[in-house]
Amino acid sequence: MYRYRRKLSLGLKEAEEKFKAKLEEKGYKVVLEFTPSDVVKSKVGVDMEPYRILWVCNPKIFYEMTKEDYEIGSFAPCPVLFYRKDGETYVAINTADDVLEIIKEPLEVVRGVIEEL
Image 1: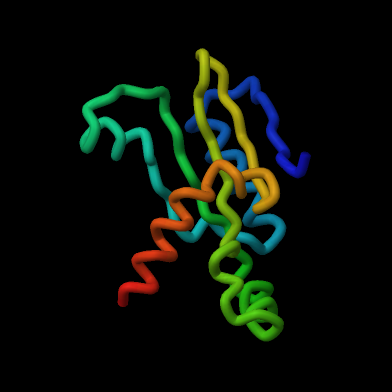
Image 2 (image 1 turned 180 degrees about the horizontal axis):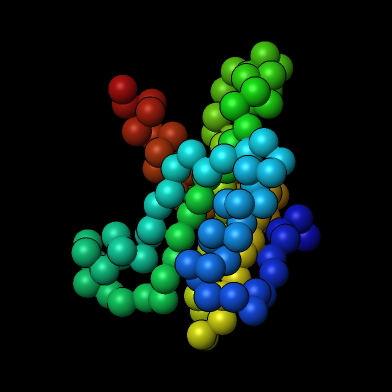
């Protein structure tokens, strides 16, 4: 399995702040933040534990990757998940191999919409 997940002994906000500070030390930044649990609440009316996605990027490395494959933006910046489940805080990253079967149907829908353009 290519997933890396850690259970943390920190609260969600504290974990995110510590993560961001450590990233900065390595030349990376969070370039986008998204809270799907808020969208689920507003659009579906369902409460779920906090779920955040932070997109991490090193602009210089991203630029170099685009020289090899200009469409690398489908995978980079790298999404890092921070979430609470059963009262515990987790941080995780996934690779395409991990999630391909899970996201197959939504990918096919999006591919179909692209075909219709």
